[in-house]
Image 1 (cartoon, rainbow, N blue to C red):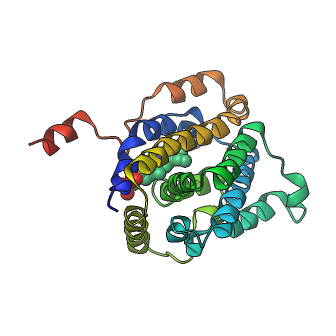
Image 2 (image 1 turned 120 degrees about the vertical axis):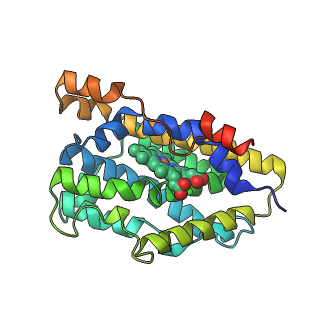
Image 3 (image 1 turned 60 degrees about the vertical axis):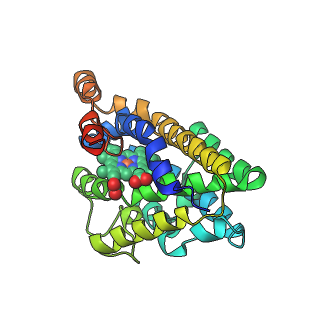
Length: 247
Ligand code: HEM
């Protein structure tokens, strides 16, 4: 069945992606004003999200749809554990706490895995394709604004099995081909695209849950200045691109 799911997902989530890029948390991240205390909480959120996502994908790896997007080589949980050990120490499991917005995200992952399995594809797509795209630039930003020691604290952004820009690019093509090969009909493809927009919202809500802390660590004027800048979307088609492609 060919429903061009990869391009459908990119297109449907273009606006949501622009909104995510324009979230206060992401803008502050890009301006390097996130403190380590907040960043480690963000890493803890990602740990809860990936623990749920990877457990569910693994549990359903023999499913006709989910099996095709089961790629153990890109799993993030192990790397997040290394980051959390670095930030919180050996007792990190007792130290980390889940915030309500993140709990809602985790609950949704289990809900779709139990009741509407094909929608789990949307959760995998938004997280992994994001980490393999804009996420790669965020790594160097985080390293410089927190002045981290070599190889510590940003293991989340490192894909040991994909250790060059070319390898990442190749994997993204493989992932998109896998999306296009899923045995889903048009209606299901549309529902996966709708769920992907919801996943963006769940991500934004989670970041929003940490926003007060970011705000408190910067002076009011700087915060207002950073959030007032509007970033053009990286994946949304812009009017000039549409003009070029409609020729
Ligand atoms: C500062 C924030 C961000 C920047 C600068 C950024 C940048 C980018 C860029 C440049 C691409 C295009 C890569 C390509 O065409 O190969 C991309 C793709 C993507 N990003 Fe982001 N991103 C950001 C935040 C996010 C967030 C918060 C999420 C969701 C959690 C996300 C999810 C995605 C996804 C799913 C794609 C793949 C789109 C596709 O080709 O289907 N991004 N991002």
